[in-house]
Length: 177
Image (tube, rainbow, N blue to C red; front, side, top):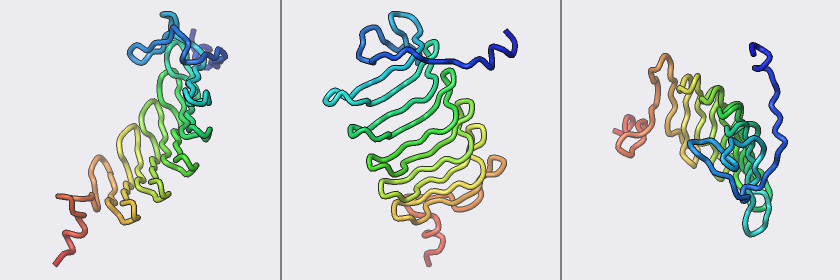
């Protein structure tokens, strides 16, 4: 066992259509004919038979590159799993191809920069994580680009403009005279 088994590359080469009989999920594990499934599963749009989603599994757990597509065939989401855990980047796009979100995962936890954009392409969230917890500069914006919150989290404490209170922007209520 030892180090050799940890460095073993897992190859998923069986490909199945999700509409085939025998697939079912129990507590987050995928089974085919009551056995943990290893391979890729494709899901298709009923009206066009175009690819909706591609998901990889290893011994029933999500594994490998997971992809989702719009009806017109453009990629709308991409993420990666290692033996059931989120790992690496999660990217998503609006139907026209513009960025929607970009997160990073390590050991199934948020790690690093986390961004979201609205449909118009305006940045609405710019957060930072360390081991699943917010840490560092945290920024939130309204759809028009105005600052909603802008603070720093250091050692679990927040410093700066924390956002709204009673549906009023805190900076607006502070500077109102």
